[in-house]
Image (cartoon, rainbow, N blue to C red; front, side, top):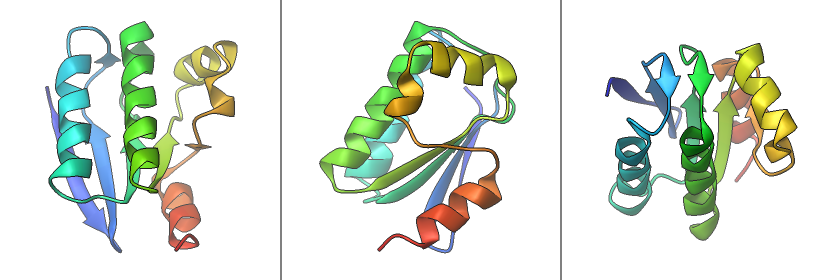
Length: 116
């Protein structure tokens, strides 16, 4: 699994450098999110899915786990999802009512900077 974690203005940006967020890597991604929250004490996180072209139910579950982890520590999460295919999947499953989505990393960072 290829990814990077950058910290910008106190906000952790997790960029998944894969074409697919699916059952093959979802366990690894969930473990990384857990580590970020529990070990690295991340309280503001952006998940950048800019390079991800497809996602299955395991991938959606991974995003929900990240959301739950951040909620458990009163943290804030934004998901950058420019792919129309993935955005449509999130809307069809009505997860757009649960997950906070942004069109770009810049937009996500601006929203999170406003939160205390």
